[in-house]
Length: 298
Image (cartoon, rainbow, N blue to C red; front, top):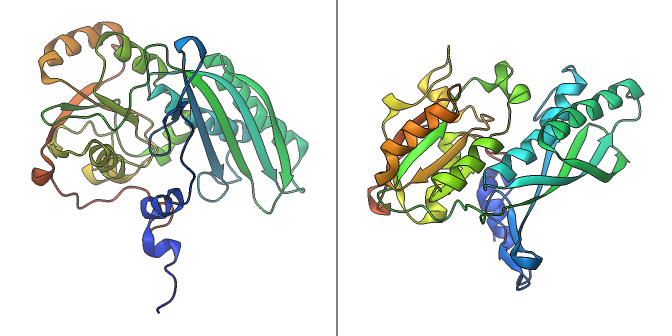
């Protein structure tokens, strides 16, 4: 027998798939387990609960030289973005901090000011957490939410659906990865008025996240690259693969295209909405030469 494969030999999605195979069968109240932006749990009185955890790590998601307040804001905003991408409202957060002991207390207070800023913006209560010593900074957020109209999944896209993205893509390293505003309001409006057939947020880049949505929906995709809403100063390749856009990627029935566009520009005139392609049978799917973010890729 050869050596055991390493994480970098497998890639992130394959690593997760192998880990999930060892999990016990979920309880009956688990409506959606691992594999979507959030877990979906059946609550009391017909309520749909959303559960999300997310972590940012020094040297991977930020550098220590960045303003602490921006780092803290990003840590919570990422989880809020995932709740929003399922048509949910974020509720309660638990925060775990792993901190080198040589940090100043002013720096750590800055992290919390950033989290408090975005928590206030979205009505999130930070209700507890944990601290631990480590060699580098890590912030882990566990967040609850609710989806009163039922969660929108990434696994329910259909052949013939149109593919949409909000905002502009690429170049997040220039500052957007710190300053983005989670599309909670936009996703909630979509869910109530033009319910997407599938939806997720773009955290790892369109080149990684679109295939994930398509794979779980068991369909393929066809994209017109000329339609990509590219950030100023960026290339199409960056729009595909930079990641950390935190925009919405969603699909809809083609019959609502005109009405959706007309209503969107009235409600969200400052947020671009772009139809970039359509879902097709799996056998007809496009192949992507670009690759988005993968935590364990070579």
